[in-house]
Length: 338
Image 1 (cartoon, rainbow, N blue to C red):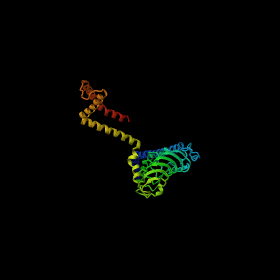
Image 2: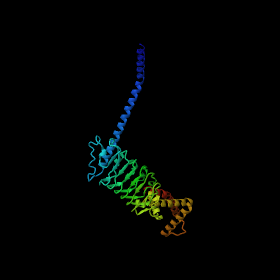
Image 3: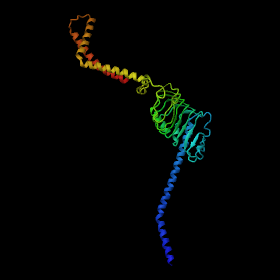
Image 4: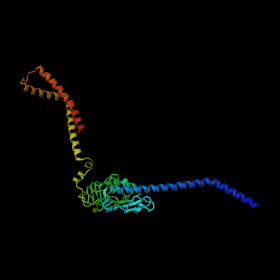
C-alpha cells in the first residue's frame, strides 16, 4: 500500500514537471527549425548569386575556342557549378566560388563586371586573354575580398584606377603586358599585404611609388620608359614638373583659355580703376584730341571758339562716359560666353 502511494506521488510530480517544461521544449524546437531554415536560405541565395556570376561572365565574353564549354547552366543549380572549368569552390556542396582561374583561354571582351556577384571570391586570374577597355574605376567593389588579382597579358588601356588601392587584402597584383598609361597610384605602395607586384611592359609615366612593406625590384617596372624613381633612374626636374599635380588635373587647353581670359579681365579692371581715379583729366584729354582732329578736318581755326564746338565737346563727353561704363559689362559678357 505504501509503495503504491509513493509511485502515485512520483508519477504526479513527473506530469507536473512535463507540463511546465513542455512550452520551453516547443520554443527551443521552433527556434532550431528557424535557424536551419535561415541557413538553408542563405546557402541557396549564395549559390544562386554565384550561379548568375558565372553566367554573366560567360554571356559577356566571346569564347572562340569554346574554352567555357563545360559551363552548362541548364542543370547547374541542381548539380554543382564547382565542376566547371577554371572554378574552385570553398566546398563542392555549397557552390560558393573561391577562385576563378581563366588564364590563356583566348577570351575576348571587356572586364566582366558580373564577377561582383561572386561574393566569396578570393582569387581572380584573367591573364593571357584578349580583354580590352579600361579596368573598372570601382574595382575594389567588384573584387572586394580578393588576395590574388592577375590581369596581365591583355589589352587593357587607360589609367590604373586609384580605387585598386582599396583592395586591402591583395598580396598578388599583376598588371603587366597591357596598354596602361598615366601614373601608378601612389596608395598602391601602402597596401599592407602586397608581396608581388608588376606593371612591366606598359606606357606608364611619372615616379614609382614607395612600397612600405616589400622591396619591389626594377623588373616589375621594366619597359616603361617614362617611369622614374627608385628602383629605376632618378626623376629629373622637367619630368617632375610635366607630371606634377597641376598638369594631372588641368589640361593645357583649359589652362591657356583661363590665362587669356584672366589677362583680359585684369587689364579691364586696371583701365576702369584708372578712369575712376582720374576721370576728368582722362576725359578732357580725349575730348581735346577729338576736337583738334575735327578742327583740322573741317579747316577750322585752332583758336575759334564756336558754340558748335562746345556742343560737340559735351556730346563727346557723354559718349565717352557711356563707352567706359559699358566696357566692363562687355568684357564680362565675353567671359561668360567663353
